[in-house]
Length: 354
Image (cartoon, rainbow, N blue to C red; front, side, top):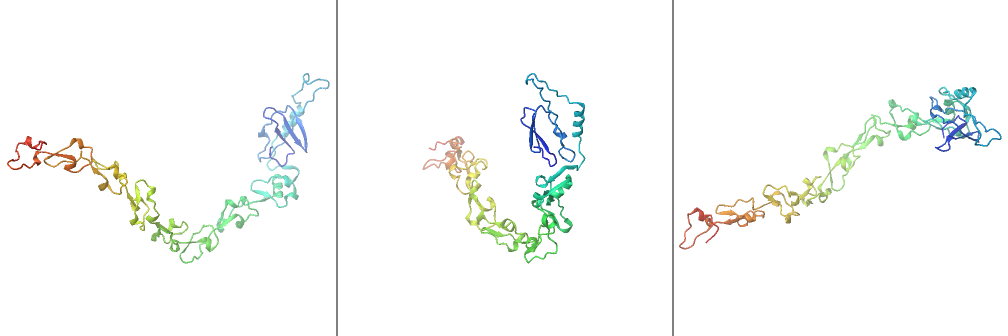
């Protein structure tokens, strides 16, 4: 339904597919047929008030004719056209409300609320006058006096009997004297008492277990608790939440908040990060260590000493000695009794140690 306080007739469509309307006027209902569609833009004036539009009269069927043979005229005469023009003319702003209005049926304007005794009140005159007689202002229309230290509080917009005290938040004055280890929150802070305008500092805050006082923040407000006043120790840092790290019990009481500060690394972290020719053996993945203890050399990278040659069959195996990665040549062989080492270079390279 169109929302109105001064119109005694309201029309609405009975169904989307027809052009019939139901007019309710002074409690009586009349079914109207073949009414033209009403242009909703013509129903409100500049002030948003709903305008009345008289429906065109229904042309009755001629007596004695059945419905099929009856003809109706939809062309209005000159008087009807003039009357329609008169009823659709926009009303001036703040037009008078038709007749006397019972305040219990009046919908207050934005920022207003019904008066306490509105059920017993009646009003007439312009919309503004009727609204003022039936309704009272709320804090939504009140402007807080910032010069006096009041700031708006949207939560109070529906409050009645507007005033700075009812609608606004008072702000702290600069002359508040705070107790030792308490600090003034500053002008413009919402509040009007020592408790609201002075805040405890970290100087009197007791850190929770696993936290240590942060000397640099002793004069800061303690509103955020541990986060504002303290520093975490490794005791509250969970290393196992991070892949490849284990808790280091030796630093539990020390300040720290990272895996670098608090945790031990496992060899699995060095997979793919060892130097060229070095890799982490799978059996060492869960062993605590660093790059020097986790990364093992492979025979393909190892350089054999003089008298030894690389064993190509072992190039992909882990090893870092001649015994693990190399084959001895005659140059390493010690001849016995009446035999002497040959000076022939070809023989010296031989791996046939006889």
